[in-house]
Image (cartoon, rainbow, N blue to C red; front, side):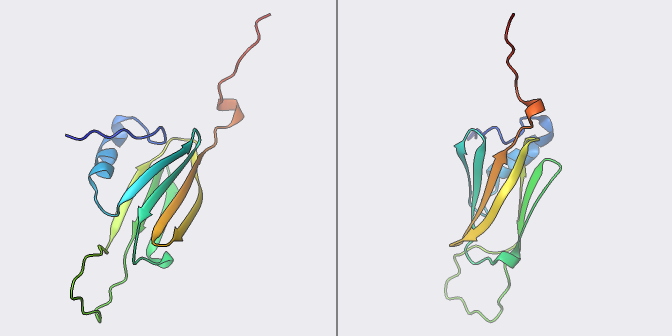
Length: 130
């Protein structure tokens, strides 16, 4: 059995266990989660053949959802059809203070920038001892 370790952007709770399991087992689209630094991440999804209008990215209630539907071209006569296309949905559970800071489709890659922005009142505090 392969065990995957996700960075801190993913909530470690029973509520999300099924979702994380699905994330690690789903093969399409191929996805990388990259930690840039302590508070910055990217999610990179290989989406060759998809257009901007075919992809829906939404963040709500602690979950980032990426969904897509490739256009069907019935006029195409494939000799070999090896590029996977079709409907997909990927859900990424996120910590409370993670927000999407950018989404772009570039050279067949969907790149989603994420940033952890903890409000000052929630950051750890140090106190001087008198």
